[in-house]
Length: 279
Image: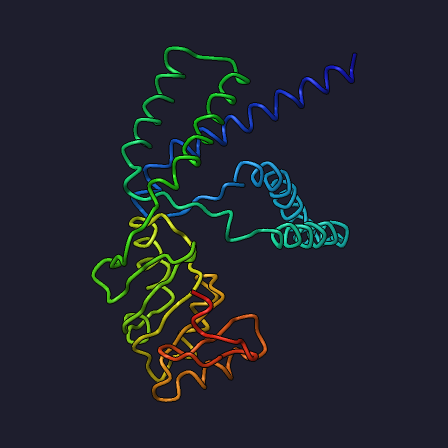
């Protein structure tokens, strides 16, 4: 009997937890679309895994603080904190940029309709937790399924008022920079709060496959290193003017970043055969 009761309790907890996660994800979708913030397709499962770890971490942190203030040995709780941190970082290492989904402003109306439906669902129908989770999961799956029809691109699109353009060729996303990145201050904030949100709002694509520098400057290496970190890109194309291509090639020689010269058919990185074969 105890095992059956425990099993039922855990089952109810899991159903209620995932129901809440889907409600939060769907109800917050209009805000995320307006702000240009991506959402992870794995967020419900990730929260299910990390929430208990976070609670345990906070409890051990509080107990460690109490032990330190009371001058009691706290090595036991410190070892638990270290183990939780190691496990946390290990689990995060499995994350992939492909899990991020961006919803363009074209889907704002649909997301608002979904929010209204969820409000009416819990106000008037009041289904059971299991039925609610199935309904919400179906809605979430349908939004992901129709998303590609709203993120299709034709030609080149401008990103806001910046000299930046975005295009997709053979299912790869290219960000074309004509001086916006190399000639602006506060590059970190510019990428996180201007370029990426505007990119998601217009195209729904939260990641970049290749970055093209058409108008580089003397700080091209620093800018490129920052872009590879924040944009998760793996290819850089740059004009060979002012020896910029050589500088980038030397800077990324021991990394997995591919550096290619623009407007030439010569190879670029580690004897790659043809610049244009990437396209």
